Amino acid sequence: MSGFAISGTNKFPTIIFDPRENTFLIKGISTPENGKEFYQPVLSWLEVYAVRPNPETDLIIDLEYFNLSTSKAILFIFYQLNQLVLAGHKVKVTWCYRDAYILSAGRDYAFMVKIPFEFRKISSRDHSPQSITS
Image (cartoon, rainbow, N blue to C red; front, side):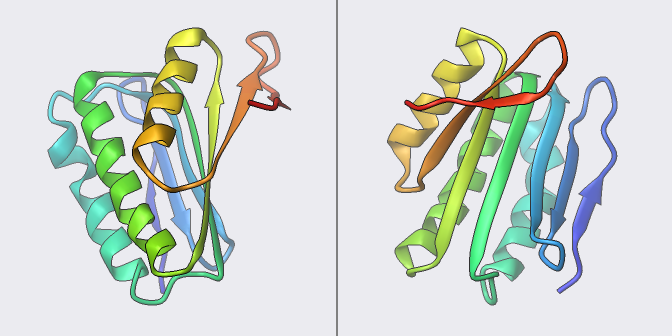
């Protein structure tokens, strides 16, 4: 299956879904006015991917900021990944955060789905991930 990619801007995140390289990443800032419209191609791609997913899917979410419209779209992404979990596939979300707001949002998502979440604090100085336990 071919991958899916969007180059990030100051308003839209970088999105890389590449099953051949086992890379699933949403990173940057996400403030589209219509998150449903922006993320629809991602959701459509995930529907096709779900037919023959990788043995393990590890989605990294590394958003510095996102708006309410994006929040709803991310939840729908998690709902699709949750279907993979319910079908017996291994899925994990690595939720990166720099502040309490983003951490809290990640914990809310983790509560709503049956996907294992790992929370990773990103240093604001060097942007390098630091794993934590939660």
